[in-house]
Image: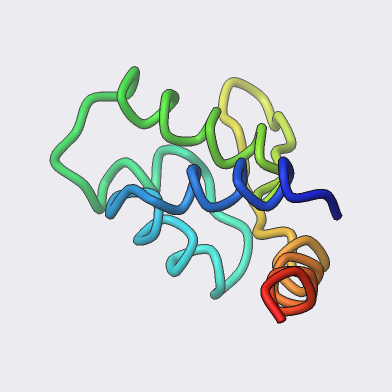
Length: 89
């Protein structure tokens, strides 16, 4: 993992809402509608946050009907963690 990729991941995680979403996804796949219920934000705002998380590779998305279902990418989080410490040390 390149430093550029690490920076993209941390940029995605630099927002409190996105951190909360990642924490929610630790419990398993969630529909966007269920994620949206947990926040006082609009659907376009949720889409903005999810786009950032998906673009970073930290979250995967599958379209089911009209809704997107999101899953945390545990391998990416593991790789981020391992590479972060290797690049700092």
